[in-house]
Image (cartoon, rainbow, N blue to C red):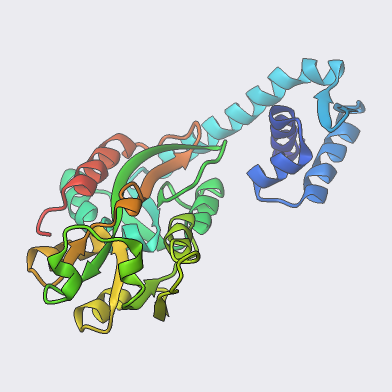
Length: 296
């Protein structure tokens, strides 16, 4: 009996929808439908009835459901046990660029100090890519943003405010808070990563009488920061990536009331029911470092 077919059955029952189950599994709807049909042929019974737009589990399938859940749990437990037998001295961590550049370098030394025999392997990618690697069991612990999936457990480790940064000599540096209209008079360096948070920053300017001149759109926080440092323009960045520059008085933050609650959040995730051996300690280290990174 195919484990993937059973997992599809459990999720379709959970959501009452092929569409939602396919999104949770990162598969196409036809693929999930095919898995359900394959399991129906194996069991020689119909698993769901359609009631309006909802799929409702049949009475025969209800009897099979607890066994299906037990099969999946047993499979996960067995896989975890095999991994432990191979040795728990390797830890695979996946992270977004934000976490990789400004959080991971401060976490790794403390993990190495606490667990001398642990070998670590790092993957960097988008939040979606790291989530998929966690779901595929290619990554033990992921550091991602804006991800909510039924098959992963998550815990917040970092929340960094998005603020406007200028050089200390800039005219806006002399003002504690400013209106969005003031920014429209400046050349803007815009870091574009395609997330909802950055779309909200971008949309602030859409209804202004004078649309600001976004002269430079870059997909690297470090590149955006260097452009701010050399006076090319002003721009928005997560506070965590410019803490060194703030302490050295090379950049200055300017508060915009309408952005006061906007921040980039990073969560630590792992596959549900398969909590990594070192997760508790690593989460605490990451949480501490996320709130107060030493040396910055």
